Length: 121
Image (cartoon, rainbow, N blue to C red; front, top):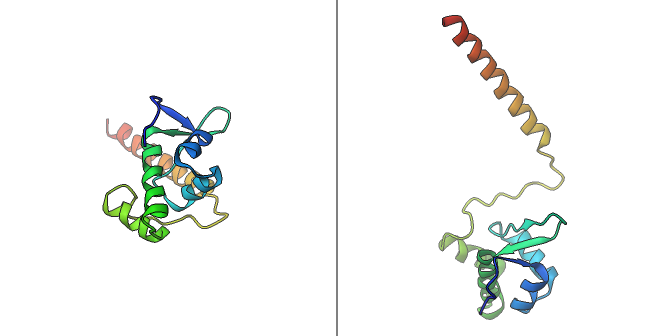
């Protein structure tokens, strides 16, 4: 597949290049953790050349070589493309409060360490 000389691609362009519908690409994003396109200022998915090449590999594995999703993930893990520890977040989990609590705890420990240093100086 010959890619145009561009740095970024929108989902419609990628879909045309790969010969699949945009919803297929969005589905693959949910199945393959190595696919995390950036979002533009308008909220559209923006893919890098590396993303498009990775999508082409996934398309080849699934459509031409008839891999299952799990088989394609395993293949990509063996090639070092897909992360080894793929632990999906449970649906509906908001990590904001957990992260906030961890940051506040770290802040308190840093303040305590600063006080200890001030006393010893």
